[in-house]
Image (cartoon, rainbow, N blue to C red; front, side):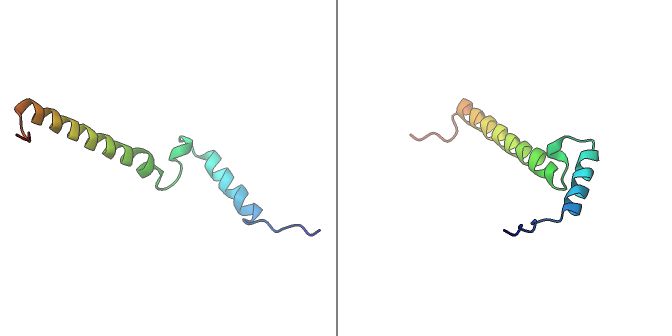
Length: 68
């Protein structure tokens, strides 16, 4: 049987591995856009949730938005 060719050249793979192993950051923050997905999106979701909770508490305490 013939051996199947690799999908990605071994030299490029070793080069990428050396790069990622040399970066002194957390593993999930090593890519270009990883800060957006790991930090900014969860922070935006938490901020919007806190805003909505605060607005709900304010509306309940002042009786705003009640149906008769």
